[in-house]
Image (tube, rainbow, N blue to C red; front, side):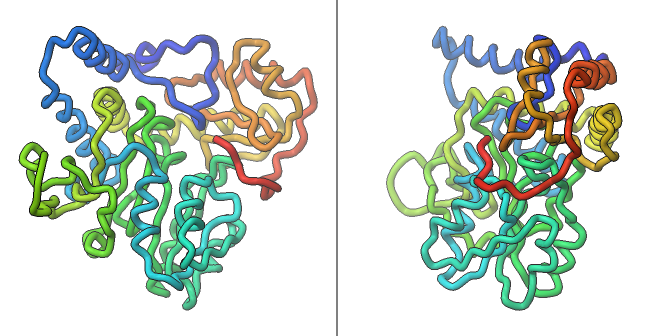
Length: 357
């Protein structure tokens, strides 16, 4: 497979933590379905086929069964199903820099007791008083990779429900969904899909405890027999939590995730982290375990953009993301460009305000 030919970046793209670039199969599939829509030259029913293909591909990616995968449009809507099903008094521990799509659905529930802790102390904060631990596998503001082993051990010891947001992980970091009660992920970042597709895996013993508050026809046991009227007839598996899909986004999502599976997430992990560490070394920073590099480098985004390199500024710090379409030359170029200024040492500190996407 000629991997580089599958993408056509304009310049050097280092902003995958904001949105990923579509591989050619995803781009072609999206444009094909848009052309069908534009010309009104087809029925609509088959536009649901890529939803099921993407569900299967995501299940394969995270090591679970497709029957345990629900689909939605975004992470917050899926997390809200879990948060809204918790009884009053439930104590939830969340990292203090958690992305708000994972945090706000819990904070908005008036009966929940939400406690925040530094990401590195989440495992030790899980105790006999904790009911739920909700966190990102990789933090968008710092690139910090959660200690999944320590968190799952602590949760198992104290019988704590776990919800992990894998949006900044799925596609480069190997993740086993069966280790958690719930795993959610938006597909438009490291899974390189159109915006508007997301997944939630649900442990079989947790499904009955979730109220399908967004149920509609697509949550029906037989989708095309659930258009109108009672009785309530929801799917018996995680599909009961589905929301009606944005057809065209899913057309691009299926081939994108299938490509990730074809390349192999372990190979992508080695590639991405290797490039991130090449970049870190060039800046005089220690090696890390993340595909996201965040550095105190004032003016770094503008400096890079001046040379056709796309990155991001998050809470005043330079953030780069290294993915399958990046190369050693990209890392070396970014280092060379940034060498005109003097970066400060990377310090994953808690921000004073909530991060923005």
